[in-house]
Length: 84
Ligand SMILES: Cc1cc2nc3c(=O)[nH]c(=O)nc-3n(C[C@H](O)[C@H](O)[C@H](O)COP(=O)(O)OP(=O)(O)OC[C@H]3O[C@@H](n4cnc5c(N)ncnc54)[C@H](O)[C@@H]3O)c2cc1C
Image (cartoon, rainbow, N blue to C red; front, side, top):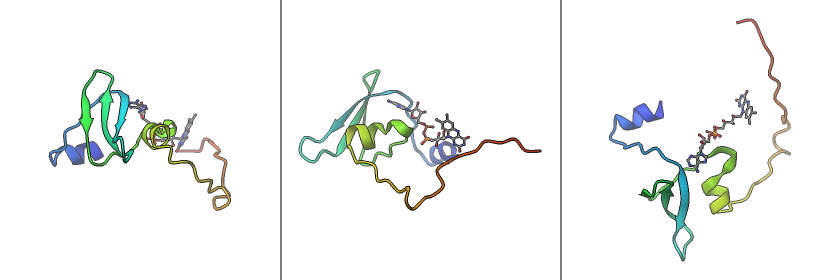
């Protein structure tokens, strides 16, 4: 949905594996991503969608994890079949 929505409004989609993350030497802000094939993607805003890996937010920025389990008592998932 987002791809269709964005591309219709002029967004260019680039597919690739992130190899390296380049940070500003003083601020530590992410300046660019370097893909495995050597392409460099610069940007002002990066949204980390790498799931549990947290390539940008955790591995690079080490933002840390705030435990909210005391607010969220549900900590199990049950997968069951039902009639369609
Ligand atoms: C075993 C298991 C069962 C689950 N079952 C359910 C379920 O039944 N129902 C449910 O709602 N949720 C389920 N979940 C949880 C659900 O899968 C996740 O919450 C959801 O997939 C998270 O989506 P996401 O887009 O944040 O990350 P992901 O789906 O993990 O997507 C991360 C993406 O980042 C990409 N990526 C990683 N590193 C790089 C890189 N260096 N360069 C470029 N791309 C990169 C990966 O290729 C991947 O496409 C399950 C999870 C697991 C592990």
